[in-house]
Image (cartoon, rainbow, N blue to C red):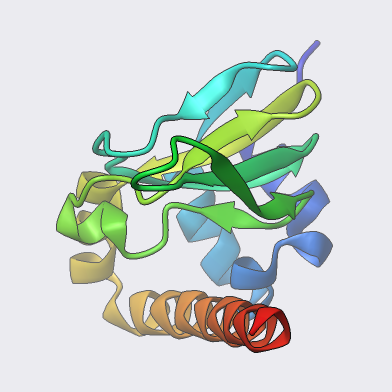
Length: 155
């Protein structure tokens, strides 16, 4: 029998950066929002430019994040994300086009939550919502700093 989504969330919480900030009761309230999505190896999970409208957390597997160069047509590896990492960030709440292409490097399971579900949850539980947004912002700040460091090393 396959585990419930809430069991997958709890089993992976020690590796899910944006959920570590929540206590057990808060995670129990949040877990039902997630849906599980599986991607076979080599599958494009999200295409650059398409509207994602969700945040996804890697429950298992690995994802490759690539950015298409504007003029040359080549793509640059931005990151390889493993268990606990998230994709989607704030673009889910603003319904912006995805800034990169995300490909499953191996069979990957994502825990996803749509922006609509997340926004409704934040309205009902604003304290938990603020904690989540702070955690996402902290991870994104680290990713931005790493990207700046890479640019500086290349120049």
